[in-house]
Length: 116
Image (cartoon, rainbow, N blue to C red; front, side):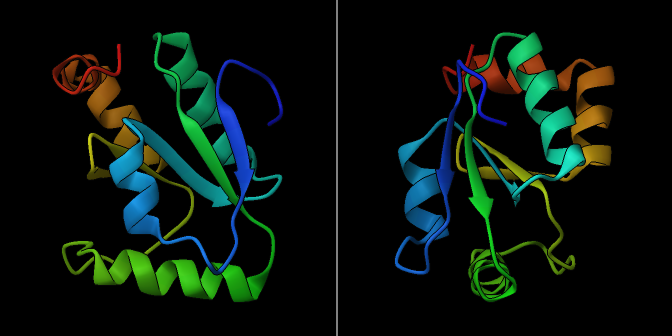
């Protein structure tokens, strides 16, 4: 996942998901080396978005991140990785991202928040 134009960062326990999401228009959070994360990134880049990718390297980092995601309000859904945020709002995982893309909602969402 080191390809441009997006930025990839390693997740540390000192970072908060809330600040990541508030500072970036499109945020993709997933496990390091996750193929689904790669597919989601390619979809976003393919339509013109520039996602910031945060990778979680360890189970400990993943647990901290899952707690933070739950605290941000995942709508009662279990937290799963990877997950995409657009304009500070959680879109969801791969299936949800594909669904909003196929329905045409993704581009509208990205345009509304200045992500395209």
